[in-house]
Length: 131
Image 1 (cartoon, rainbow, N blue to C red):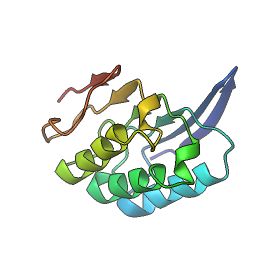
Image 2 (image 1 turned 30 degrees about the horizontal axis):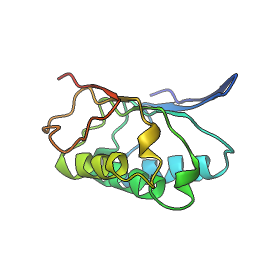
Image 3 (image 1 turned 180 degrees about the vertical axis):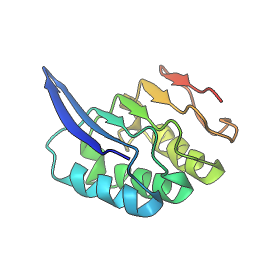
């Protein structure tokens, strides 16, 4: 598949997007490495990858770390990433932890998630889940 890796600078909006290329934990490590090199990111568009539980856990572990907390991410697209219960738990912990920066998330796209979203705390946010 073709790699789409681009950054858009629209006044006060920084977007990080990769599709069809990431695989599990290794893919998440690639995203984390790229995020570390950025000053600001407000949207993570990671749909159509195969992050699965392992990659999702690694990504959100980074986002809840002191280094990852500097990003105020308002939108996350994790559609079609084969995320299960463990991955959803990692997302929910990020959203629920007021210190993590998860409070800034207003849109979370989880199309194709095969597990229940009961872990997610919805507070001033739109969650789009379709199967």
